[in-house]
Image 1 (cartoon, chains in turn brown, green):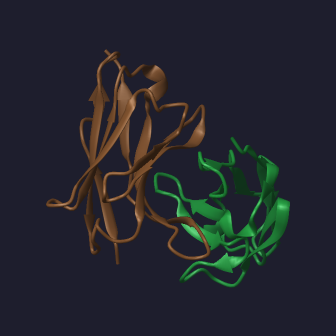
Image 2 (cartoon, one colour; image 1 turned 45 degrees about the vertical axis):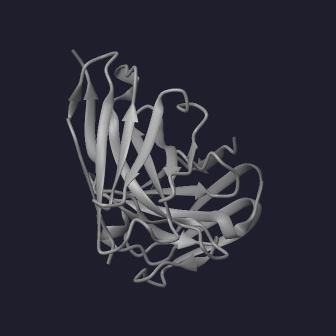
Image 3 (tube, one colour; image 1 turned 120 degrees about the vertical axis):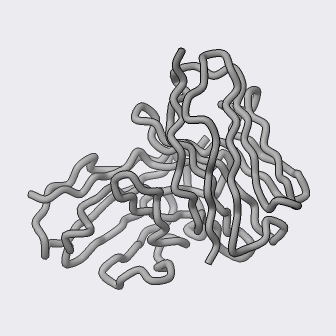
Length: 121
Length: 108
């Protein structure tokens, strides 16, 4: 059973950088899966931020691409998300999730519990 | 990007009844790449259906999916108390992957 756990500051100042990590257990981050970040705010519902493969290849949502950086640390079996120049609109619950897209179907099969990040001074 | 529009926004039903939730895509998508998720308050989404109609592991058979092209449906038969939560559709056909805005199933 794959388990994902997000961690990081729950409060970030406007114009600052949001930094989160996602620890993966019960499976290897170097598997054939991509790994995604998804956020959920009352105003915009569920929004896919981007995804990363263990090789470091990435794909980002164009709406956030200029501000997002995803990375992996294979030695720690964890993912990282950095979102720069944050505003109140970036206040949301942030989830990491595993993409299952190795076969004929694609979907998010495992999700972390989520972490609420508030942008406020 | 592909916009997914779910309807209705809220569905008011009684336990034991059936629920029909709609998800309409702004362009045709392969049914292989349409999924449904259930979200309980304060929890992460949980995969219910993938490939438009394939139930995920451990999902009861009262949940069923159907549809193709631009119109997809999630049907919940014999609603149980724990089914009164929010449901989302999601497409993995064209990046950026997108979600519908959700349908809340509430107790009437």
